[in-house]
Amino acid sequence: MLGETLPSITRDMDTYTYRLPVGVCAGIAPFNFPAMIPLWMFPMGMVCGNTYLLKPSERVPACTMLLAKMLQDAGAPDGTINIIHGEHDAVNFICDHPAIRAISFVGSNQAGEYIYERGSRNGKRVQSNMGAKNHGVVMPDANKENTLTQLVGAAFGGMALSTAILVGEARTLTLSTAGTTTLSTARDQAGADVGPLISPQAKDRVNSLIQSGVDQGATLLLDGRNVKVKGYENGNFVGPTIIANVTPQMKCYSEEIFGPFLVVLEAGSLDEAIALVNNNPYGNGTAIFTTNGAAARKYTHEVDMGQIGVNVHPMFSFTGSRASFRGDVNFYGKQGIQFYTQIKTVTSQWKAEDATTKAAAVTMPTMGR
Image 1 (tube, helix red, strand yellow):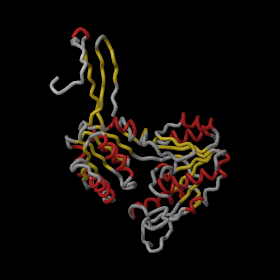
Image 2 (cartoon, one colour; image 1 turned 180 degrees about the horizontal axis):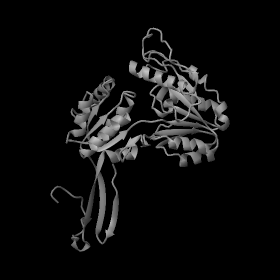
Image 3 (cartoon, one colour; image 1 turned 30 degrees about the vertical axis):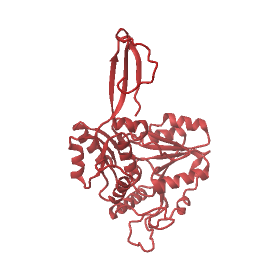
Image 4 (cartoon, helix red, strand yellow; image 1 turned 30 degrees about the horizontal axis):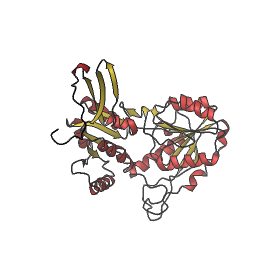
């Protein structure tokens, strides 16, 4: 929240800025991270002095309500955070209401483009964080154990890396057994690694994308379509799935999958891998796995992505670009503060000749003196 000062821009004149809240802000959150993503939104907005209106996904509203209750129990004044439920009408209300000054969104490209266009047309600040196809580039010299651990966790858990590009001799990396260590179980049970998908429709879509890869000539290394969880045999479970020999023209590569599904491509060189990543329309995040500092430096400088991990999947901060983002300012850190505040600039002139000379004060000041 600190402003900036430029003293003595001319004789007896100074300029300084400070940041003020923008007013009422709103967040529209998706279903896939019902706690984490709202926590990217309202804490930053409220810390900057704004009130907040939050719309959770209609599929998972309970988590947001629990967060709001915790905030209320902690002493937040009534009205500083409000929750609105619903679908299209609730979104349009947020985009249209004149009191709402800023909108933060995470979700699909279709919804994000709509919210960005409608909200911006109504004079609001909008940050739309949208789709992703995050690539993990594996170099031949990569630490194999760490790389497998990162790919499994990122592809089957947090979806931080849904695509692996094996460069050169790295194509010999054994991926088929990596996913078997991650079992689908009910998420409310101890030791659960991968929970069910959000709906039967989501399960059907992931299964159809797996089949599309097979039909287009890819190699299915690990098939999670027929996984059954005891006691939840009719649940929306898809087990860890790995499909190799994928090309950029395949549907399983071009579409965002939203499931425990690792797509594997191959590249002859690091330059070819960088070209693959940059030719994909999304610009959310990527990672390179290597023990060669020069390769890591080349990759981080030449790849066109908002978030980059080196020997770790991308995590901070959420700075997507290209088709993954619409807006001017991203989430959290200094950028988050910039989004949720507005600048006030003051230029003042106090002429030296106007200074009043008084007798020296040799006693402590008291009331009235």
